[in-house]
Amino acid sequence: MPAPTIYRPFLNGVYTVSAGLFRMGAQPIPWREDGAAETHTFALDDDYERFVVSKWAAHRRALHEYAGEANLSPDLRGAALEFTARTLAAESGGAMAWNGQTFRNSLLGWEARLDLRWGDVADLRRFDAPLAGLRGDLEPTGALDFLGLNAQEDLAIIARDGQTGRDWLAATHVLSPERWDPRDKLGRDFVAVHSPVAGSGLMNATAPRLVDAVIGRGPFVRFAWGVAPDDRLDHHPSALATGKTAPFDPDTAFVRVERQTLTGFSAAHGALFTIRPYLYPLHLAVQTPAQACALAAALRTMTSEQQSYKGLRGVMPKLLIWLDARAL
Image (tube, rainbow, N blue to C red; front, top):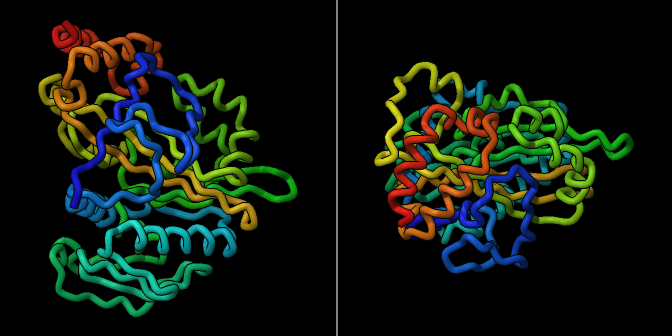
């Protein structure tokens, strides 16, 4: 499998909270190393095993803290999960297969028959495979759970009432959250979901137009980023509360980039939202003085509220000294 793609969305030297939508397959991504447009929803790379281990640990610890549904219609569930099964298989390089009824993963060594409209999983069968030892006896609770456990990406489904225009987060399967609890977002509208994000006011002001674009004019890809003290994928507040937090050290810190895609299903009044975190050691993310300079400049544009939201308030001076030394 290929190495993970490297994205550097900080290269513009400014930290912003905005929609930042790029049309899939059409608009080049300036912070990709090759500057190409994105054409895929799911990415299967040589970090797959680490995602499986992390996701399944979260699943075993407390699935209800990461996954749930809120007034999700059968039509939207069916549209989103059919797209997920079909596209995940098509973009897996042959590692996964979907025949319209059964999804098979030849890396993890399991397959199941899925009722996508009603969310059921049946006839689960396990077999020998390169990573079969990772899954053990874990039991998926439904079709969304099963598909989410096969992907490196997290999954969420956004719904909108066709008559009133009200939108809400109708389903989550987010096992690699970054300092937020999916339970706090489920059932809430776009503005309520994003209001806790420091600096989201301007984006929230355009919420109706954004939701309309996502459902009717996609697919799109967008990016969010920050600096993390470790390469842990699951930063759920409950999971973090049970572990020890090491002191922040730039030499062992990581740039965390989230690649997010949005695919709309206008006939079903909703959209699929995928979230894939990429974690790069800081020294890899800023391999040149220009890259170090850009990251330092972007961090300096953060407000104090944004620094606190990203967990950087107390460590920013140390981080900037480290980057400035490499920007010379």
